[in-house]
Length: 157
Image 1: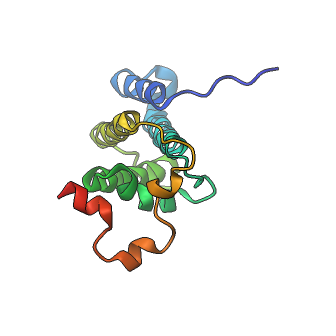
Image 2 (image 1 turned 90 degrees about the vertical axis):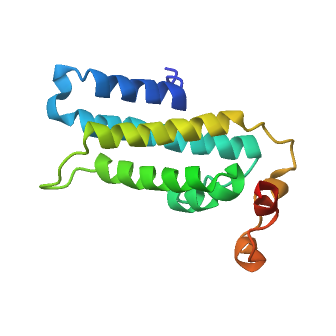
């Protein structure tokens, strides 16, 4: 028996958007959490694709730790901050809590738009040559000791 191929972030987002637009009756009141799960999977798949493209072996790190590295890799602090907010919101929405309301369609659509923006940013990043991971991600602790944000902040100025 062969495993089904994994869906790409773009495919996951397509399914999430279609659930928001026209949720099937079988999902009734559960569709917001289904959308949140699909969106979070798309975000995590986009991050995995980013690290693979950059040759950075960070898969062992928690999602929060990976998100902290995001501004230095993609070079867009606003998108990185929005992605962190979206991941936190999607994580909260994906877990059922007693008496907690599901996210609204508007909240979900905003998070989906952020995940799609991240996906497009990752798609626009060329894959690094082997051995270039050192240039793509500074060693742990380098960001704290640099103070000014390093060469990435100079190139954006």
